Image (tube, rainbow, N blue to C red; front, side, top):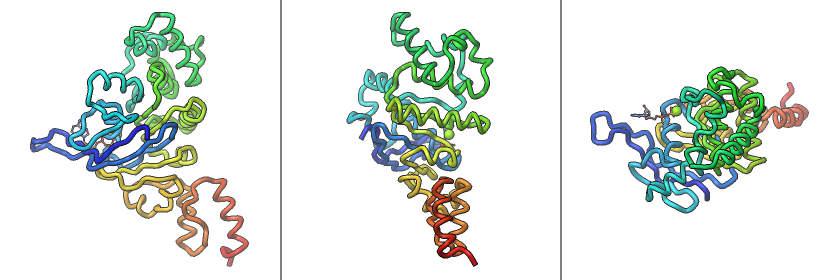
Length: 287
Ligand SMILES: Nc1ncnc2c1ncn2[C@@H]1O[C@H](COP(=O)(O)OP(=O)(O)O)[C@@H](O)[C@H]1O
Ligand SMILES: [Mg+2]
């Protein structure tokens, strides 16, 4: 297993009247090359969890194991880990500081002490990886890009470290439908093409479900579900109980199943829904 947590617990401000358990006994597995979505109501611990996966936060209890090594055991190791597991924060553009896209993306490789030629090569590679035209964008101010381009630039800044895994905290938040689609397609291509292991925190279930192999559901700091999208969506009532909206296709399939039409309620893509409905319409649905 590439990334693993064992009984991970995190308490903010322990030993004070403000002590809050943000994670309680979370054990999960992310295989190398996998693509997983992490969902859960607001305040369920998603952001806290992902900051443990590259050693930014230290567990109050339990442990995180990456590639067979316990995270946090060794300082030098933890610094290397931050390069191997790239973390894209929520609203990453709020942390832009450079005058040009080039300098923004070059920040991390320069910090590695690489020669200018090697830095430039990494910047070009990362900018092209996210689908931005290097020549057209390298001298532009990152502050003057569109919302979607800013997100792509922030992802390029992390990719410039050539990480093995990419973890993103609500990367599609605030983007329009087209921007969201573009972003999720990029994640799929980084996963399928470049082989990056990806974990994405998102509530855009409709777009993400057909792309990922695993969905993890957090509630009140506990991992309450984990499985393939079909497995998770078959528990639609529970998801709804957590205040999580199902993809519209899933809602319809659950609704049909509730009213006696024997369709498979775990179906969440339009294509599968069409197959289910055309099959059952002949059998049992019609009056
Ligand atoms: N820096 C912090 N100090 C104290 N409590 C925090 C801090 N960050 C998050 N929390 C609390 O931990 C819980 C989980 O938060 P978070 O991981 O941000 O959840 P999510 O990302 O799912 O919205 C919430 O109750 C939140 O208020
Ligand atoms: Mg969060």
